[in-house]
Image 1 (cartoon, rainbow, N blue to C red):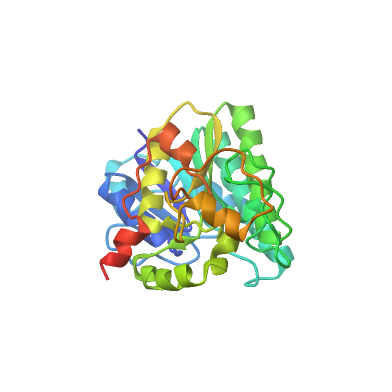
Image 2: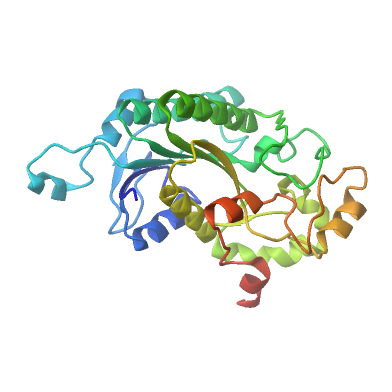
Length: 298
């Protein structure tokens, strides 16, 4: 199992939860980001993923001064988890969002492959399914949303993530490596569960997220499982929790709110429309933070 991990973007909303969880699993971690993570046991290296030289150096760096005591130059890391990105539209201009996200991912994957690092996990997004940042009220083409869906975003962020998936696939094929792309759902932190009562009361407010979500701590588990799973080549996994963020059952709910959208298979119970079945069956993912249980904690 990979032990020394370069994690890009660990200071962001998801990363600040994922990194401590991975630390508890025994990984040695280096956060590579524009800002340092405030954690006493996780060092940060300040840098920019759009600069290929900085990326190369980050993958071949000591994690801290402790590395100097070993008396040998640092080897490349065992694996890379790449979360660094402009996190959505309407922060930067569209062209800058696309440039940062596409070139950052290209630099990360290329450097890893040419350094002999054969495990890379890249953050893709639910936005690839085309509705989250769509103009107007766009319907999904079918339910459930699974990994072979014909992704069709119309925004710069979702488009950058589709491009990143193609980049990952190309390098995985060329270098016969494991590169897994996580289509991460709406990231929910522990303090966000107070909002879920409002989600249930206003169901259409969650349509752009396909009535799905990922608890940041469960996302950490998925990353961990990806780091453990070897030999899968290029893969895409939906990174979401199990259930719909609405009163179910799911099929009846969708028939009411999206009556014109066909279903490609039966959805059981309150299954999330953005399906995590592949992550459960291939990686062994088991959610630890279902939203109703988290709401009950108050």
